[in-house]
Image 1 (cartoon, rainbow, N blue to C red):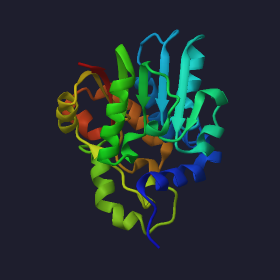
Image 2 (image 1 turned 90 degrees about the vertical axis):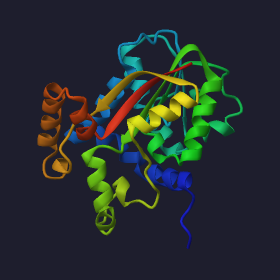
Image 3 (image 1 turned 90 degrees about the horizontal axis):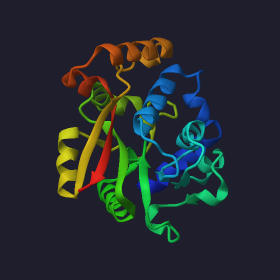
Length: 254
């Protein structure tokens, strides 16, 4: 039996995780919690989102929405995700959700001040990723920003996982590496050139969740503590490129 297309495989995977997904990033899972919240914190930065029009693409169970609610009293928020089960676990009002892909969203608002794509691009095939960028350009207001997180191809974490993938897939589990779909990873230098060519300017770069590969499998507590220590102490760009499994880009239209 042939495997389903990429996006359908990803949807099925997250549908299966939806009911218990929030536990993966709770204090019961200190390493994943450290990674997840650092991604959100770097994505939001210190910007004022009051009264801004915000789109969260791949919103999942609404973690970004919850953080915005905690810090801003008024903002205009929309969420999309291909997994209806994930959105059903969120507190996002029904009228602010869209289940499906951007290109099938016929009633999408014309413009947004901020568009977020967090934990999404890793699951998009290259053509689909560039289609998302094209859609964002058409719907981003003048002076607005697009924030995207990427799996860091230059990191030791990614390099080890890629090398061990055949072995890891033999083990039972719900990890991403054990699934039938592919995970797209990017190098900052390469994606920077692609983005510039497509009319985007990088405003900020943030490397996320410095860590020692696989330490979390032995102790999530020590993996989180070590990661926070590395974040405080390691400032060299060379080391951060290799110790951080993700990076976040804040983009503006040229």
